[in-house]
Length: 182
Image (cartoon, rainbow, N blue to C red; front, side, top):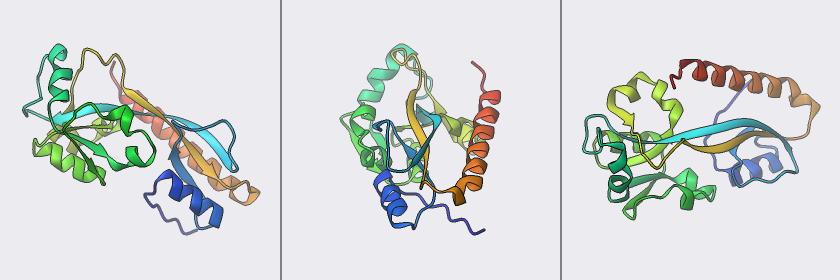
């Protein structure tokens, strides 16, 4: 079986499913609805935390000063948030710029040019933990969480692959949770 993994926004996934060019899509359903014209399986939540350069200007701030600093420092906003209609939920700083690629946001933060909401799962990556760190914010009692689901056409032919994808996601979530120290 040939598998292509492409980064698309929700509208592009929907279009691909409708045309038959896409068979599966992992999509943000934070602004979702209960019924879809496709098979939709809720998989869980993606958590986001404010990440800054390790040892940088925002690193080590007391948590009661962090929000004020984030509001006055350049924020990089992942374009995927805009495409999914979530930008208004994540923008904290008036000085914000959209960034198309997660890897570019990471490089910009690593250069101490600002901060961004990044997936908490990145804290598992040795590269990330060497260069970036999430900061504690007094007013943020928990991470931002966005719901995500697996979309695919209603078809018995894709059922085996769907089960395999769900198992892989479930296994990864369990692995990540086992690494977390609260």
